Image (cartoon, rainbow, N blue to C red; front, side, top):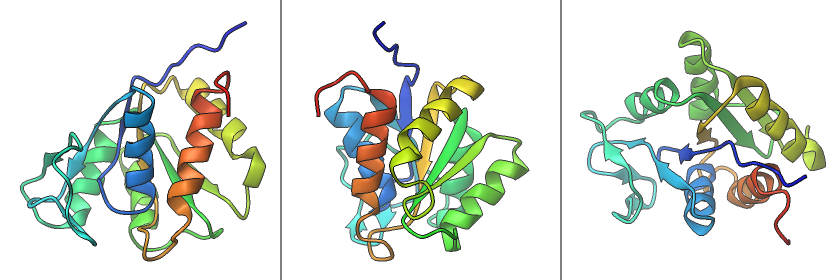
Length: 162
C-alpha cells in the first residue's frame, strides 16, 4: 500500500543548521514551506535569503520567531546531534509545552536509525499537517542539517528511492 503524505507544510525559523535543512527538504520535494523569522531576516550567516517563504516578526530577536512557529504549527520536532537540548532548542521545547503543542526531540546519539520511524509515529499520532522543525544552528552542530534532511525523507517520503 503506498504511503500517504500527511504533512502539508514544513515551517522553521530560517536559521542555519536544522532550520535550513528542513526548508531545503521541503523545497526539494515540493512540500509547502514557511514560518516566521526575525525582523530583518536575521540569521547567524547574515540576512536569510528571500527565496525562503518566511514572514518577519515585529521583533529582531529569536524568541518571538520561535514562539510564533510553535504556536502556528500542529506540532514541533526538535533535532539535535547531542542527547541534551540547550539554548534556543531547549527554549523551543519549553514553548511547545507552554502552548500545549506536541513536541518530539530527536537526537542522533539517542534515536539514531530509529529517528524516521519515531517521527512518522509522532506525525500520525498527533495528526500533524503543519510541522515545525527546529534545532541547533550550524555553528553549534555542523552535521544537524544532514540529520534533518535524511530523517524527514525517510519519515515523510518512505516510498521514494534513496
